[in-house]
Amino acid sequence: MTGKTTGRQYNAVIIGLGKMGQGFDYDRSDDAVIATHASAYIRHPGFELVAAVDHDPLKRKRFEVKFHRPAYPDLTSLMALHSPEVFSIATPVESHLPVFLDIMQHAATAIICEKPIAVTAQDGHRMWSLAEDRQCPLVVNYMRRFEPGSMEVRRMVRTKELGNVFKGSAWYSKGLLNNGSHFIDLLRFWLGDVTGVEVMNEGRRWEDIDPEPDLCLYFHETPVYMLAGREESFSIGKIDLFCSGGIISYADFGNLIEIRRTCPSPLFEGYTILRPDREIVNTDLKRYQLHVLESLYKHLTTGAELNSDGRSATETLEVIDRARGQLYKGVQ
Image 1 (tube, rainbow, N blue to C red):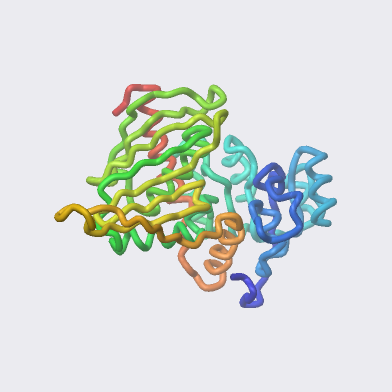
Image 2 (spheres, one colour):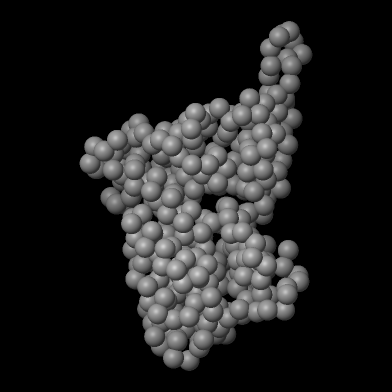
């Protein structure tokens, strides 16, 4: 996937050295799992990881030990010694806006921001509009939009290979903003704009902060019922799309994608059933962050379209804000 480049290499830095910055695959030395910004930058030939920022000295030390690059307590200290072009924001969501505004004081070529883009859609709008004014690509790390299996599902849905999608169901856990936003965004990538939001069950709040309602999202005439699981029992991320010609099952957070097509019943004349065999769609979700970087590299070098940007991520956050409005203000 990344064996060849145009020869252009972009200097990159990471702000935030937690799980997404370096933690998830820190103990791995192979490329079977590429789940962090640090590992992706190291492995993509179009980028050179030059430094990182984190306020925690232990995380800085871990970064320096593994990646042999310096880490600094703040962006000001980093910028005094380096001239990065690409910035990754991998800090908690409440800090995305101030970190982004800090980066905007420098000449950024591109920014990758963890999801969700901000706490509110208003903040997200401020971020992407400023990035567009500066002509600075702002990628929001809804990584499933870049993963080959998810892109194949989008192709099947958009070409109606299995007919029209007439209904869907989705399960999520660990909060609507934290994990649920992944699946709202992915459904938007596949099905288009959300035209209606209905809270069916208020549910609880993950860690007393992030709501976990049961929702019905409408994509024009297509309803998708989005249900909250319980993270302490088990993590769940699953989508089923019911089509006139079969079912698309996106299971295990996207590590398993199965297609079942319809066929005439061999026993009962006039009845249509699902075929017993399952088609497996190839996925590469375990290396999701490398696919994000590859898309950004193609955008920077050839102008290829980005599947996720500040504008699309803010539109996803607007859907969440509509749900939160019903939960907290009684707004329909």
